[in-house]
Image 1 (cartoon, one colour):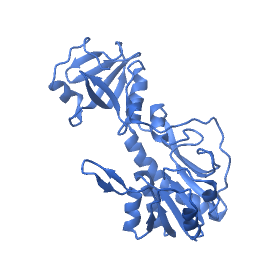
Image 2 (cartoon, helix red, strand yellow):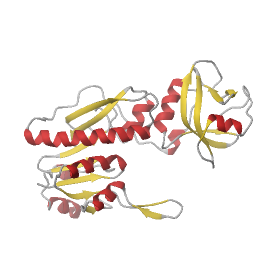
Image 3 (cartoon, helix red, strand yellow):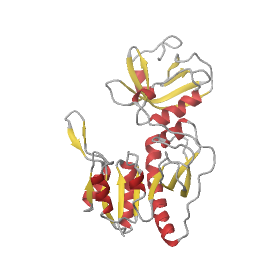
Image 4 (spheres, one colour):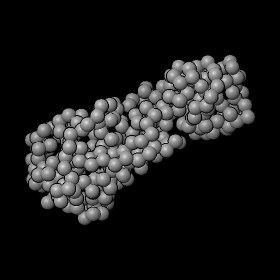
Length: 307
Protein backbone atom coordinates (compact mmCIF):
# COMPACT_ATOMS: atom_id res chain seq x y z
CA UNK A 1 0.00 0.00 0.00
CA UNK A 2 1.04 3.57 -0.63
CA UNK A 3 2.70 6.00 1.77
CA UNK A 4 2.16 9.75 1.54
CA UNK A 5 5.05 11.81 2.92
CA UNK A 6 4.54 15.37 4.14
CA UNK A 7 7.62 17.41 5.00
CA UNK A 8 9.52 20.54 4.03
CA UNK A 9 12.97 21.44 5.51
CA UNK A 10 16.35 19.73 5.75
CA UNK A 11 15.26 17.98 8.94
CA UNK A 12 12.74 15.90 6.95
CA UNK A 13 15.16 14.83 4.20
CA UNK A 14 16.81 11.87 6.04
CA UNK A 15 13.36 10.46 6.92
CA UNK A 16 12.18 10.54 3.30
CA UNK A 17 15.51 9.15 2.15
CA UNK A 18 15.29 6.27 4.63
CA UNK A 19 11.81 5.30 3.41
CA UNK A 20 12.97 5.32 -0.20
CA UNK A 21 16.12 3.34 0.65
CA UNK A 22 13.89 0.76 2.35
CA UNK A 23 11.89 0.54 -0.91
CA UNK A 24 8.71 1.75 0.76
CA UNK A 25 6.02 2.73 -1.71
CA UNK A 26 6.20 6.49 -1.27
CA UNK A 27 3.66 7.45 -3.92
CA UNK A 28 3.30 11.16 -3.15
CA UNK A 29 5.27 13.89 -1.40
CA UNK A 30 3.45 16.97 -0.08
CA UNK A 31 5.58 19.98 0.76
CA UNK A 32 5.33 23.74 1.17
CA UNK A 33 5.28 25.99 -1.91
CA UNK A 34 8.54 27.30 -3.34
CA UNK A 35 9.67 30.58 -1.79
CA UNK A 36 11.47 33.64 -3.07
CA UNK A 37 14.87 33.92 -1.41
CA UNK A 38 18.01 36.01 -1.55
CA UNK A 39 18.83 39.30 -3.20
CA UNK A 40 18.09 37.89 -6.63
CA UNK A 41 14.54 36.99 -5.58
CA UNK A 42 14.89 33.55 -7.18
CA UNK A 43 12.41 30.80 -6.36
CA UNK A 44 13.87 28.22 -4.00
CA UNK A 45 12.45 24.70 -3.63
CA UNK A 46 12.10 23.01 -0.24
CA UNK A 47 14.84 20.41 0.40
CA UNK A 48 12.24 17.63 0.56
CA UNK A 49 11.01 18.53 -2.93
CA UNK A 50 14.53 18.39 -4.31
CA UNK A 51 15.05 14.86 -2.98
CA UNK A 52 11.65 13.65 -4.16
CA UNK A 53 12.13 15.01 -7.68
CA UNK A 54 15.60 13.44 -7.88
CA UNK A 55 14.07 10.07 -6.99
CA UNK A 56 11.14 10.36 -9.38
CA UNK A 57 8.43 10.83 -6.74
CA UNK A 58 5.40 12.95 -7.53
CA UNK A 59 5.35 16.24 -5.56
CA UNK A 60 2.48 18.61 -4.86
CA UNK A 61 2.74 21.96 -3.07
CA UNK A 62 -0.75 23.11 -2.09
CA UNK A 63 -1.31 26.66 -0.95
CA UNK A 64 -4.26 25.43 1.11
CA UNK A 65 -4.83 22.01 2.65
CA UNK A 66 -8.31 22.47 4.10
CA UNK A 67 -10.09 22.00 0.80
CA UNK A 68 -12.19 19.12 -0.61
CA UNK A 69 -9.89 19.00 -3.65
CA UNK A 70 -6.78 18.34 -1.53
CA UNK A 71 -8.55 15.69 0.54
CA UNK A 72 -9.77 13.90 -2.58
CA UNK A 73 -6.28 13.94 -4.05
CA UNK A 74 -4.84 12.27 -0.96
CA UNK A 75 -7.72 9.79 -0.71
CA UNK A 76 -7.11 8.62 -4.28
CA UNK A 77 -3.90 6.95 -3.08
CA UNK A 78 -5.71 4.89 -0.43
CA UNK A 79 -2.68 5.41 1.85
CA UNK A 80 -1.50 2.94 4.44
CA UNK A 81 0.34 5.73 6.29
CA UNK A 82 0.69 9.46 6.06
CA UNK A 83 4.14 10.35 7.41
CA UNK A 84 4.59 13.92 8.65
CA UNK A 85 8.05 15.33 9.39
CA UNK A 86 8.31 19.09 9.89
CA UNK A 87 5.69 19.82 7.25
CA UNK A 88 4.83 23.18 8.80
CA UNK A 89 1.04 23.03 8.87
CA UNK A 90 -1.55 21.56 11.22
CA UNK A 91 -3.56 18.78 9.60
CA UNK A 92 -7.36 18.76 9.94
CA UNK A 93 -9.22 15.73 11.27
CA UNK A 94 -10.42 14.57 7.87
CA UNK A 95 -6.81 14.11 6.77
CA UNK A 96 -5.76 12.55 10.08
CA UNK A 97 -8.51 9.94 9.68
CA UNK A 98 -7.64 9.13 6.07
CA UNK A 99 -4.79 6.55 6.17
CA UNK A 100 -5.43 2.92 7.08
CA UNK A 101 -2.76 2.83 9.79
CA UNK A 102 -2.85 6.49 10.77
CA UNK A 103 -0.78 9.63 10.47
CA UNK A 104 2.66 9.24 12.03
CA UNK A 105 4.71 12.25 13.07
CA UNK A 106 8.44 12.37 13.81
CA UNK A 107 8.99 14.98 16.53
CA UNK A 108 12.43 16.14 17.69
CA UNK A 109 11.97 15.77 21.44
CA UNK A 110 11.10 13.19 24.06
CA UNK A 111 7.41 13.99 24.31
CA UNK A 112 5.62 15.34 26.24
CA UNK A 113 8.63 17.64 26.69
CA UNK A 114 8.96 20.45 24.16
CA UNK A 115 5.72 20.20 22.26
CA UNK A 116 5.63 22.74 19.47
CA UNK A 117 7.53 24.14 16.52
CA UNK A 118 11.07 24.61 17.92
CA UNK A 119 11.91 21.68 20.24
CA UNK A 120 15.57 21.49 19.26
CA UNK A 121 16.31 25.15 19.98
CA UNK A 122 14.39 25.18 23.25
CA UNK A 123 16.06 22.03 24.55
CA UNK A 124 19.39 23.83 24.22
CA UNK A 125 18.11 27.16 25.56
CA UNK A 126 16.80 25.35 28.64
CA UNK A 127 20.11 23.58 29.22
CA UNK A 128 18.99 20.00 28.66
CA UNK A 129 21.65 17.30 28.75
CA UNK A 130 19.57 14.69 26.91
CA UNK A 131 17.03 14.95 24.12
CA UNK A 132 15.77 12.63 21.39
CA UNK A 133 13.00 11.87 18.93
CA UNK A 134 9.46 10.56 19.26
CA UNK A 135 7.23 8.93 16.69
CA UNK A 136 3.57 9.35 17.53
CA UNK A 137 0.08 8.86 16.20
CA UNK A 138 -1.12 12.34 15.30
CA UNK A 139 -4.32 13.75 16.74
CA UNK A 140 -5.88 17.20 16.62
CA UNK A 141 -3.83 18.53 19.54
CA UNK A 142 -0.39 20.13 19.49
CA UNK A 143 1.93 17.12 19.64
CA UNK A 144 -0.42 15.35 22.06
CA UNK A 145 -0.86 12.05 20.20
CA UNK A 146 -0.02 8.61 21.55
CA UNK A 147 3.66 7.68 21.55
CA UNK A 148 4.81 4.87 19.27
CA UNK A 149 8.59 4.85 19.78
CA UNK A 150 11.23 7.06 21.37
CA UNK A 151 15.01 7.19 21.17
CA UNK A 152 17.31 9.50 23.13
CA UNK A 153 20.79 10.96 22.68
CA UNK A 154 23.11 13.05 24.81
CA UNK A 155 23.61 16.69 23.88
CA UNK A 156 27.27 17.57 23.41
CA UNK A 157 28.65 20.38 25.55
CA UNK A 158 29.62 22.57 22.58
CA UNK A 159 26.65 21.66 20.38
CA UNK A 160 24.45 24.30 18.82
CA UNK A 161 21.01 23.94 17.25
CA UNK A 162 22.48 23.46 13.79
CA UNK A 163 24.54 20.40 14.67
CA UNK A 164 21.82 18.98 16.91
CA UNK A 165 19.32 19.31 14.03
CA UNK A 166 21.52 17.09 11.90
CA UNK A 167 21.99 14.37 14.50
CA UNK A 168 18.31 14.26 15.44
CA UNK A 169 17.25 14.15 11.79
CA UNK A 170 19.32 11.02 11.22
CA UNK A 171 18.11 9.47 14.48
CA UNK A 172 14.50 10.24 13.59
CA UNK A 173 14.83 8.60 10.18
CA UNK A 174 15.94 5.35 11.76
CA UNK A 175 13.21 5.42 14.39
CA UNK A 176 10.61 6.08 11.70
CA UNK A 177 11.62 2.97 9.76
CA UNK A 178 11.54 0.89 12.96
CA UNK A 179 8.13 2.31 13.83
CA UNK A 180 6.58 1.36 10.50
CA UNK A 181 7.98 -2.15 10.72
CA UNK A 182 6.80 -2.48 14.31
CA UNK A 183 3.25 -1.35 13.53
CA UNK A 184 2.95 -3.84 10.69
CA UNK A 185 4.28 -6.69 12.82
CA UNK A 186 2.18 -5.73 15.83
CA UNK A 187 5.22 -5.16 18.05
CA UNK A 188 4.76 -1.38 18.33
CA UNK A 189 1.64 -0.33 20.18
CA UNK A 190 0.53 3.27 20.87
CA UNK A 191 0.67 4.46 24.46
CA UNK A 192 -0.43 7.73 26.05
CA UNK A 193 2.16 10.38 26.77
CA UNK A 194 3.20 10.48 30.42
CA UNK A 195 4.91 13.20 32.44
CA UNK A 196 4.71 16.94 32.68
CA UNK A 197 4.45 18.61 29.26
CA UNK A 198 6.56 21.59 28.27
CA UNK A 199 6.34 23.75 25.20
CA UNK A 200 8.65 25.00 22.45
CA UNK A 201 6.95 27.87 20.63
CA UNK A 202 8.16 29.05 17.26
CA UNK A 203 11.08 31.48 17.45
CA UNK A 204 11.06 34.92 15.88
CA UNK A 205 14.02 37.09 14.98
CA UNK A 206 13.43 39.39 17.94
CA UNK A 207 13.65 36.44 20.33
CA UNK A 208 17.40 36.40 19.74
CA UNK A 209 18.06 39.66 21.60
CA UNK A 210 20.46 39.01 24.48
CA UNK A 211 19.40 40.06 27.97
CA UNK A 212 22.65 40.56 29.87
CA UNK A 213 20.73 40.51 33.15
CA UNK A 214 20.55 36.74 32.88
CA UNK A 215 23.31 34.51 34.23
CA UNK A 216 26.35 33.53 32.19
CA UNK A 217 25.25 29.88 32.21
CA UNK A 218 21.80 30.80 30.89
CA UNK A 219 23.29 33.00 28.18
CA UNK A 220 25.72 30.28 27.07
CA UNK A 221 22.74 27.94 26.58
CA UNK A 222 20.86 30.74 24.85
CA UNK A 223 23.66 31.34 22.34
CA UNK A 224 23.81 27.65 21.44
CA UNK A 225 20.05 27.39 21.04
CA UNK A 226 19.85 30.48 18.84
CA UNK A 227 22.61 29.39 16.45
CA UNK A 228 22.39 29.42 13.48
CA UNK A 229 18.94 31.08 13.51
CA UNK A 230 17.60 33.46 14.68
CA UNK A 231 21.01 34.14 16.26
CA UNK A 232 21.86 35.63 19.64
CA UNK A 233 22.23 39.36 19.02
CA UNK A 234 23.42 42.36 21.02
CA UNK A 235 24.57 45.90 20.18
CA UNK A 236 27.84 47.74 20.54
CA UNK A 237 28.37 51.33 19.41
CA UNK A 238 24.94 51.32 17.79
CA UNK A 239 25.58 48.28 15.59
CA UNK A 240 24.34 44.70 15.86
CA UNK A 241 26.70 41.88 16.74
CA UNK A 242 25.81 38.19 16.56
CA UNK A 243 27.31 36.02 19.27
CA UNK A 244 27.98 32.61 17.69
CA UNK A 245 29.99 30.78 20.35
CA UNK A 246 30.33 31.55 24.06
CA UNK A 247 30.92 29.78 27.36
CA UNK A 248 30.18 30.66 30.95
CA UNK A 249 33.14 31.24 33.28
CA UNK A 250 33.49 32.32 36.87
CA UNK A 251 33.95 35.90 37.90
CA UNK A 252 32.01 39.05 38.61
CA UNK A 253 30.96 41.87 36.41
CA UNK A 254 28.23 44.31 35.58
CA UNK A 255 25.64 42.98 33.12
CA UNK A 256 26.69 43.83 29.58
CA UNK A 257 29.95 45.51 30.56
CA UNK A 258 33.17 44.46 28.85
CA UNK A 259 35.23 43.10 31.72
CA UNK A 260 38.17 41.80 29.67
CA UNK A 261 39.28 42.70 26.14
CA UNK A 262 42.96 41.81 25.93
CA UNK A 263 45.19 38.89 25.04
CA UNK A 264 42.62 37.74 22.50
CA UNK A 265 40.07 37.20 25.29
CA UNK A 266 36.68 38.91 25.37
CA UNK A 267 34.57 38.57 28.52
CA UNK A 268 31.28 40.27 29.28
CA UNK A 269 29.58 40.69 32.63
CA UNK A 270 26.22 39.10 33.45
CA UNK A 271 24.05 38.85 36.54
CA UNK A 272 26.06 35.79 37.66
CA UNK A 273 29.46 34.99 36.17
CA UNK A 274 31.15 36.11 32.97
CA UNK A 275 30.35 35.19 29.37
CA UNK A 276 33.54 34.39 27.46
CA UNK A 277 32.85 35.01 23.79
CA UNK A 278 34.62 32.68 21.36
CA UNK A 279 33.15 33.69 17.99
CA UNK A 280 31.02 36.58 16.84
CA UNK A 281 29.87 38.39 13.72
CA UNK A 282 29.76 42.19 13.58
CA UNK A 283 27.07 43.72 11.39
CA UNK A 284 28.11 43.73 7.73
CA UNK A 285 31.13 41.48 8.29
CA UNK A 286 31.99 37.79 8.30
CA UNK A 287 32.06 35.66 11.43
CA UNK A 288 35.35 35.90 13.32
CA UNK A 289 37.04 34.79 16.50
CA UNK A 290 37.04 37.07 19.51
CA UNK A 291 40.79 37.47 19.06
CA UNK A 292 40.34 38.74 15.48
CA UNK A 293 37.59 41.08 16.60
CA UNK A 294 39.75 42.56 19.34
CA UNK A 295 42.72 42.94 16.99
CA UNK A 296 40.70 45.28 14.83
CA UNK A 297 39.52 47.68 17.51
CA UNK A 298 40.26 48.98 20.99
CA UNK A 299 37.70 48.28 23.66
CA UNK A 300 37.91 49.83 27.10
CA UNK A 301 37.64 47.24 29.82
CA UNK A 302 35.21 48.13 32.56
CA UNK A 303 33.84 51.04 30.54
CA UNK A 304 32.20 50.04 27.28
CA UNK A 305 29.05 47.96 27.36
CA UNK A 306 27.05 45.64 25.15
CA UNK A 307 23.34 46.35 25.10
